[in-house]
Amino acid sequence: MTTPSFLTVDLPCEVALQAAKKKLSQTGLRALQTFDLHTARHTQQDCPCPNHGTADCDCQMIVLMVYGETPEPAALILHGSDGQTRFSIADDPSQKADRRLVASIKEALDIKSAVSV
Image (cartoon, rainbow, N blue to C red):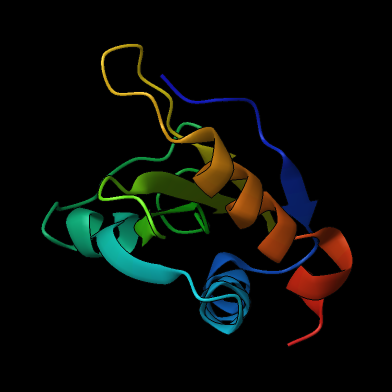
């Protein structure tokens, strides 16, 4: 389960990813990338996109495990398409993300900070 997006930026996913990593690092959080949709789709022949078809698809999903002071990370999900990127946090009832860590992530990625690379 994923929480609703808490931030949308008018940046392609790769640009938003670099800005997010920089902002997280500047606040003492560590981000480890664990998934990249482009890499996963690369192994599939003619992987159809339900939104854009195959040739014009710019959809991207990246998952970062973000570590702070707690031993358990929070999963930060970046979902990009059409030149925008939406940020959300994975939230599973059996493995809740630490509220303080989530607050730190959201604070680090505030709208003004996320777009100033």
